Amino acid sequence: MRIGALEGGGTKMVLAVCNENGEVLDRVSIPTETPEITMPKMIAYFKEQQVEALGIGFFGPVILNEQSPKYGCVGNTPKLAWKWYPVLDEFKKALQIPVGFDTDVNAAALGEATWGITKGLKNSIYITVGTGIGAGVIVDGKMLHGMQHPEGGHILVAPHPNDTYKGKCPYHGRCLEGMASGPAIEERWGKKAYELSDKKEVWELEAYYVAQGLVDMIMLLSPERIVLGGGVMHQTHVMDLIRKETLRMVNKYIDTEELSDIENYIVLPSLNDNQGILGCAKLGMDALTAAK
Ligand code: ADP
Ligand code: ZN
Image (cartoon, helix red, strand yellow):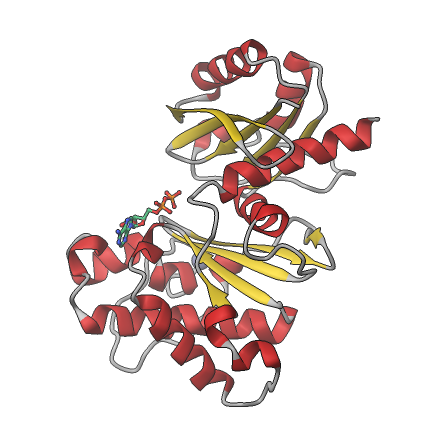
């Protein structure tokens, strides 16, 4: 089976062909320019690769309400060339194959839940901490949608008493993304995040904010496991700080086997950075099954 997978990001598009066993058979990446420039290139790739179906995980916000006339469009994004662009319809029209569509983080959550570290669990969350912060949520085996989709990066956090940073989010200032994304770290400390590896105070503060986000999600959604991905998590030493902070903030209020085994509860991704693209492939497989 040849399934097309498209991980659509604000800076690059990753295009791949996968099979039903979660193997990546081919993969290319092209810069994200305007739809007029980038769409024809992507369509040509998937045609040439003769895929049977396509799964798309796209940078949000995207419209996932199937009743909406804008279903499958990009929503209110600062990337103005893509705002309201009908990604799903354009691919369907051009390729004439089943196409699945969701957010990039929901796709990553689905990739891990299908082939990775949350396989077999019905309720899990995948959080990316990178240029932005996003959360893909799987509840009872299905990706959580609603009026739109969760925006877990924009939950509000309590500022640390010693942190005077104003926050990077243009909408909320000091939301989780505003305080803990890669660009927030870089603006607050005046250096690239990877250059700050040995600065203990940087990662203690990062853990303080990320843990608040995790605690809110734990309280609200009761995930059986949480995966933390994204560029900032390449600082793997921050994982232990986040685990400790999370337990400190939960303060024994929740007493489950999962939380008592915190190293297996808050974990790194397991698919060599293929979780997003493989999740897209699963979206494509599901679209194919639904079309049969
Ligand atoms: P994106 O979110 O754009 O899809 P990434 O998940 O790679 O891409 O996130 C990019 C962000 O992650 C940047 O802000 C960068 O500073 C940060 N980042 C990338 N690599 C590292 C690293 N090794 N250590 C800390 N931060 C990193
Ligand atoms: Zn925000």
